[in-house]
Image (cartoon, rainbow, N blue to C red; front, side):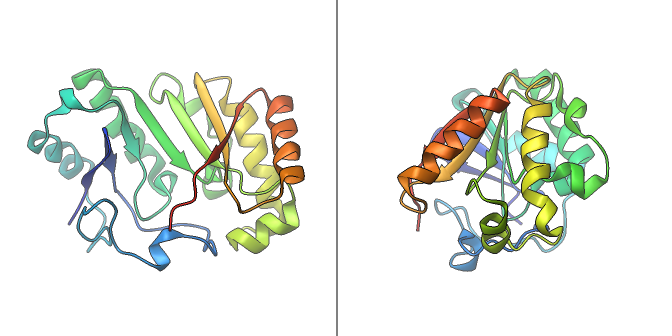
Length: 200
């Protein structure tokens, strides 16, 4: 199983294939690996101990960040993910980033924002669109129409505990007017807006 894999100057952690969304644009619909990683489809979810043991096979001094992002939503295993993040931060002193759909509050039925404090340095959340109906069409979230508002609420809340919170959309997928609306949303929440390049 591929648990850790390299992309550019970062090391990525693949702990689950579960996700509450079935996004129309999800890369895992058209590929099974990233950057020649080998298949990111897991035979089973690795234990925390197995994930930690994998670090021994990598030179941790050469990476800029440890990124929780694989073929699934990392916060489906929130407590396990944070346990691994805590270990990596204490052991290697490496910055930690989480790439997420921002729906961990809905996944766990509670305010999860305080759990990230001191463990995660950057959270990058897929905003996708300023419109809640369009968001549901794109993400097909199992939580329904409340998903967009919950994601925005999480972004605002978690910015109190995590130094860098980024909401992103993909270049060429929405109009310039919609991008301006996204920028305004991020300004009100006090988080960073990023337009990331399209990857096929």
